[in-house]
Image (cartoon, rainbow, N blue to C red; front, side, top):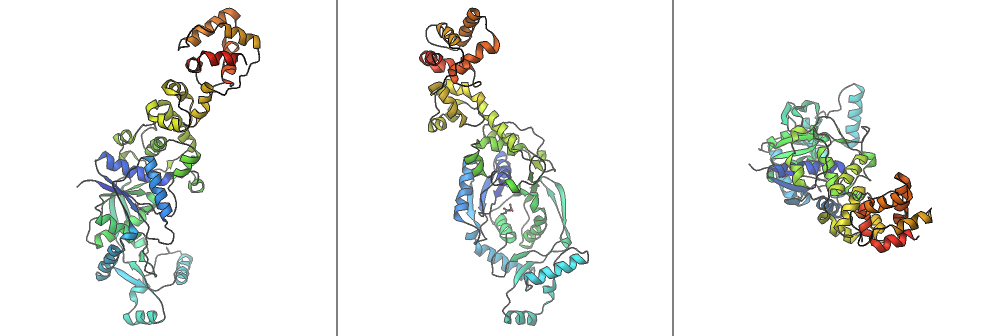
Length: 443
Ligand code: GLU
């Protein structure tokens, strides 16, 4: 059977690094095996889901290059969920409960006070038809719970290995609310069955869900797909990421931080695995050494500073052709030689817009010793400046003035760039050209 996986965000917000890691893991799992990657929009919560968030999530994934083979919305599939509800009712596995939220909370309080786990007591199973009719006559509406087996459920998790959830320790999950709306649990199973998903790969926060969902798969006459739960991301000091997620949304990383999609993906593909983090130019390269067996059981540390370093390293290796259009768009395209000269100095691509001014101006020359600048100008090699000119020029200045090291080089850099540091001068000199060099040395 060919591999088919899905990424299933709820369009109640934009996606952040944690979700991207889940999406990427699914994407690479499919790509490596020549399978399909489905984008499922989990919008059964009609109140909180918006089209704007859905569009935003799609734009984020597209920008990252995580293209999907197929997409659909859960909100278009209520008829299928309704049939599943009927099937479960017919098997006696979905039962009506009339407890109000307050009543449930009271029961949980008592259980906790007695040192018992706050598991639903299944009181509703004891209701007779007459009891139910009476409750309905009082205007109460039921919510519907799935009847768990009370047995341990075991699966071989693609990340965690053998995993067991004892369903006796869980409350029977509510699948349908009082107002008839669906919680996530059932629609997800129905969709995974009907779209032929072969593996569910998601965060460890869903392990307990999996215990219940496996029983629902079986109750609906299906075999559950493979399941893999990856540890969640934590911050550099092991703290929860949730507080800083705004800045760690795809939108923030793109628009505010100006980071490269492949830097983000290169980092997220490798943290929490046994592979080293290396900047990779494309998803094929990431897929080539992807393997869920390399995932650690410990939380993956996400460090925004490391992301910046990967971004810089990626840019240092990026060929001109891969960025020329974007350079043009930011008015920072001064040709391949310029790119090769400045890329080792970039942290973000937008830095190129600052560096292009070193070549094209305006530059405010910094000249502390006008005589030295004038001497240097008189010794500039004749003709067109080339890659060798800087060496010849500074050799001649050294011979003439006896200066060396910082005293020799820094005033030249300050006069030509207005700055104390920057890209290598031997590369910049030919890009500036004779006229500009002489003008800047003149102040
Ligand atoms: N919409 C669910 C979530 O975002 C999907 C979980 C799953 O992959 O099954 O948590």
